[in-house]
Image (cartoon, rainbow, N blue to C red; front, side):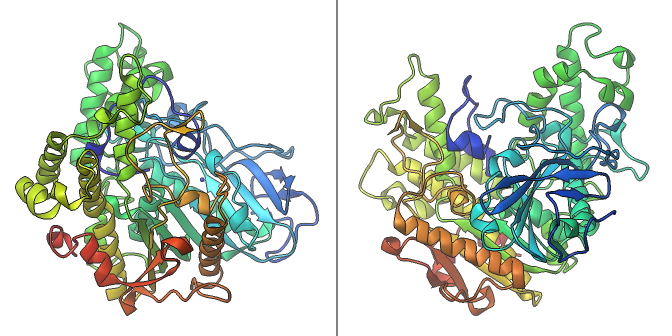
Length: 573
């Protein structure tokens, strides 16, 4: 997931369970492209892999797409995987990449040796369109394992590939000692994704996929990754179409390489100062921090200090302007028309930041002494003072005055008659509009202005399954969540029981849109409501029938609801 860091609080000492932890806790060819593999064993350019047969699907788990980024390969661009001869026959995804900090969504079992991907292919003959999933998790958490059942998509005749990539300090630490021959440092996690995309181009034909028809898609940090690939010159030619889910939140937030290096250096110095004498290893004994010191630093020290310090040091982590992956900010690249051109689906959820407000409430409840999980006790909701404090932070970030935010654009009285809920709803709306909705409209508008094909959606189902807070079969929070950040994911992956026929019908429509787009570059087709392109001035509302259904709404209604032409007009590009 992604979002503004001021809506998050320090994580509790114990992890959350349920869907939230799973979410935020995703060339030697055996046969020509288009031919059905004659066996469950497929030959890749480095070695053979064997399928796990599932209902209507062949899954190839934990395929190495790059060498383990350990030792001298730590904080370098990914290197090729070593070849192997015996078939890899895993039945589950590889371990998560080393996670950052104490997020409640932190995945268990993380390791530096994590650059693996999964391939989920339909039964039958190809060539199948290919959809490459990039998981979210604020670039600090998450893994492919949470998205190991893409049946809603695969059943419609596409191959889904899901990858791990380096996270947090391991994926994005910029430090002067780590500069490569061109003087660049950082953004290793994006380089991992690019290596995985090169692997797909080279190998997916052996699985029955079409290497010339690759769609990248992702949610939150995964959606921002898709946006990064649309901007990065190093991603040119690695994909054909793109789907951005809740990913435009960081379009104006990239640090310069110098800024990222300064924060990285500060985190490293803090880590070394906290280490016991000799704990950082002999290479760190000198007065200067060297690449050898950093690459030889014990994982135990990284876990204890660097990961957490780096995460809190940079706030809401997004890829930086490193001069290599991103020569300029994404906003500047798009504004100059220098972005990679591709058909795009781009969208967000109606109340994205309700999830982050809910996280704050849950953390407060779980860390109370004793913990309080009684939703009738509404003392854990945000207060008017907290809403004002959040507006002050947002004012510093945006340049919009705090008084305008609280009195003109997001006054409490605007958010229903439940006085106790008003601050939470107002704060969530301000965060949703400023970070997700209006940035998303800006990105769609820029692509359209370039003459590109772009379709925009807003997920609006207030009945969507809960992301977190359902403990022991009871919802323990006072604040609602839907349709919050990540709430569309169970409609594309088997992650939760949708139960209700209306939700299942919406899921069917969404999966059809997504796979139609992967197949032909247009979400429209038989059996689904017409989805006009964004250039017609339309945003597609994705909702259950009782909530208004799936239909187009004027983009002006979208921008008015989210105050894109008033509070956030200065951010249009």
